[in-house]
Amino acid sequence: MPADAPAAKLAATRGYGAEVVLYERERMNRAELAASIARERGATLVPPYDDPAIIAGQGTVALELIEDAGPLDVLLVCLGGGGLLAGCALAASALAPGVRIYGVEPEAGDDWLRSWRANAIVSIPVPDTIADGQRTQAPGVLTWPIVRRFCAGVVSVTDDEIRAAMRFAFERLKLVLEPSGASALAALLFGKVDVRDARVGVTLSGGNVDADTFAACLAAAG
Image (cartoon, rainbow, N blue to C red; front, side):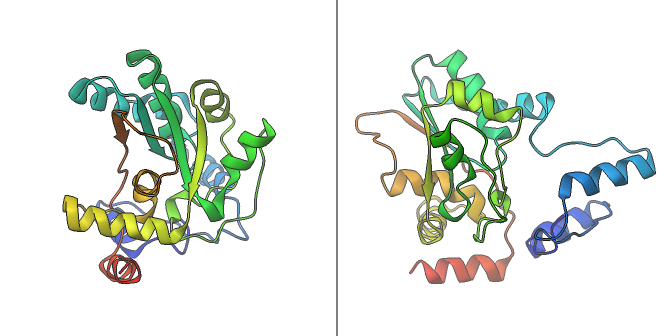
């Protein structure tokens, strides 16, 4: 895990009995480090997003949403490496033909938006954003073509908009969201996509935030 990962995420992971190996985002390659550890220990590597099984598993988010709520006109999905978005795009397109699907990433980490405009994978430096789960540098090799084919577009939100969405979720929905899990909601609240007269689905994907960081985000959104 990155050395600057939220304290709550680190504590929970260790609490479940896992050994956490920390690395520096700016100086070390996560994929290479994980592959090296797997080789040394004979371990099975579970990729965070760029894997068919991961994509399929994360697609159950849209599957269950549509099964419970019915067909959607628009689906907004938090976007980092693209596993969640790719999986949701495959499921939603099959279950709700015509649905417009958008990925939402932080403005400071707009690797997907740049890639979308260039129609090719674009890499960026490690982004500086409060959304630690979305500090990816490039779309996944497997997730990119799926997103490009099935999604209507990618939009971005600022860190301040993410903070406001976290506050809205806490005050109105009684939900604790980490910054990365609030980006899609921020896109809805700040009109990043035209959703007039539409049935809209929004992913709220994660609550890995420690109390001090959460309180600071809510205070800054006030």
